[in-house]
Length: 244
Image (tube, rainbow, N blue to C red; front, side, top):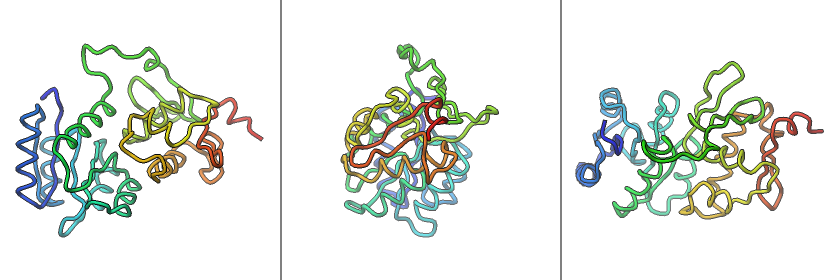
C-alpha cells in the first residue's frame, strides 16, 4: 500500500478529477476516481480507499446521498466539496457524517493538507513515530469504552460503534479533560481544527451525533453536559452514572 494512503475522487467534472488525481499522486497518494455514484461503488470495492473526496453537486445521486450511503456501510473518511459560502449544504453534510469539507474554488495545497490531517486522525501515528502513552488507555465514556490506541468506541459486549475521525477526536479531548468546561473555540484548538470558526455549528452537530452514540437519553445528556453560555463538560462514568 502506498504509505501516504488511498484517496477516491468522486466528481462529475473530468478536469477537476484529472487535476486532483495528478496533484495528489505527485505527493505520494494512491488515487482513483469516479464520475457518479454507480462508478463510485465499483471503484470503492476495487480500491478500498482511506478517504473519499466527494463533490456535493452532481447529477443523479448527489454528494449528500452518497455520503449517507458511505457512512452507513463503510469505515472511510469523507471530505465534502461544496460551493463557496454554501453554509446550509455544509452543515447538512456534517450531519450525515462527513469528516470535513472544503469550498470551491480551493487551493490544491489546502486540500492536500486536509487529506493529510484526516489521514492522521483516522490512523494515528505512522510507523516509527512515537505515540503518547495516554493513547494506550481505555476510557469509560458513559456505558461505552473509548480505546485511544485503536480509535474505537466499544459497547459493553465489545461491539464497535462507528465513529468519524472528528467524533473520535472530540471524545479523546473530552476524555483527556474531564470535569473541565471546554468552549467551542478550545475544542477546535484541541482537535486541531482551527480552520473552523468558534461559533460554527459544526461542533454542536458533532456533539449531538456523539450523544446519540453514548448517552442513554440523548435529549437529557449526562455524559457530555452543555454548560450554557460556556461550552461543554465531560463527566466520567462514575459521576455521570450517579448524577441527580
